[in-house]
Length: 484
Image 1: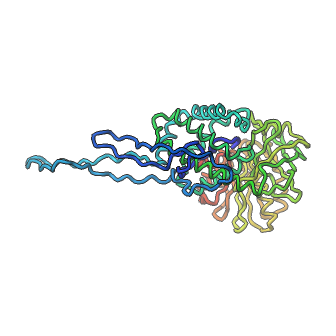
Image 2: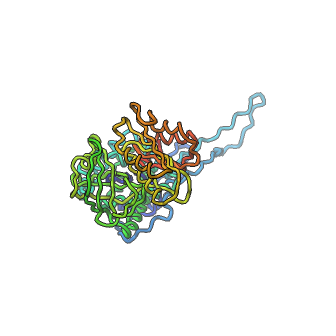
Image 3: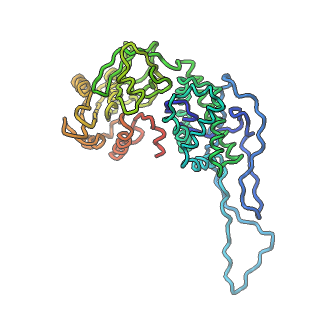
């Protein structure tokens, strides 16, 4: 994510142990049970017991995660149908009348924590913009000091809270994915200056916004479920940040040492970090410029790790892109930018001899180039097939570099693909061009480019028989997009 939203990355939430409510200034006292309604009254929502008075919010030294952090998102118990009891003795029907069919009671309403959380999300989904606006209004009104942690313009910030909640609700049964995702957020939030003591304020604002706009589903039990969920989320993120603090800074200062314009809106920016910056080919970093403080954007490394420690990025200026326009049109040698920690899993598995099938669209060729260099540095002659796509012929800004690499490495093949107009070997959509070659059943696939190209590419590769676990890509909406 580009700002420290409640539960997001570039968002997610998970259910958890609701015993510790210290983050909100009150404790739910565990997950309360309900009392069954009488037969004469309609079913009612179980009431939660009165919350206990908590101690002060946890201090940074207390970093132990809840023992069951995903309890609130666990699978809902199966409700068995019950047969209604009758106090009167059974009466035999008249001989001429057929037996009356036996009536079974309706299944009781699912009041598990997971169901309550999903019910709240379903209610606020049509008005997500109002909910998130109210959330930030509450946060900044009650805690104005936190405003400094966020970018000056909040336009791109408002949808991240709800997107995060939907992501978590979709992946409720995948604790490993959620833990990895939330840990990444916790580490990433360090660059914004987020501290453990900030989480209670965020939780308080979250509850306030949900209770305001989810009036139909809100109640003591629902509130307890959300308290437990957010408590687990925040603890996972705090733990990850604390562990990361022991091994890496929150950010790196990096001086621009080279700035090369490749087209009128694409530049290759090379920087020198102020201290060692470990990363893997295929990963990306978040960048912040001095012209737009607290606004971070992701860019992939355009090379494998180099002996001189320099880092290169391919940046395309996009309309209303604050960071991209600053890097392309304002940054020059001598300027200093900030780097977040490296992230991403689109890396080469060097334990296998599988070939690499690489699809790079636009500036997405940058990490593909890094992957090729990584294979070359490891000295193994693995087949690498690169499909380099662009809309027009002159948009293939790095084709000369890729063709020189092809001449140096006999195991590398580079094929340009252009949407409009003939060029090279192939024309049309990049994913479709791959189908003209193959077979690819012995290859690991790597995709980098616009989100639409990645989605089409994944569908195409799955359709030609490449299993999903051998298709790798990194996208800002990678986890969020999975729910679609």
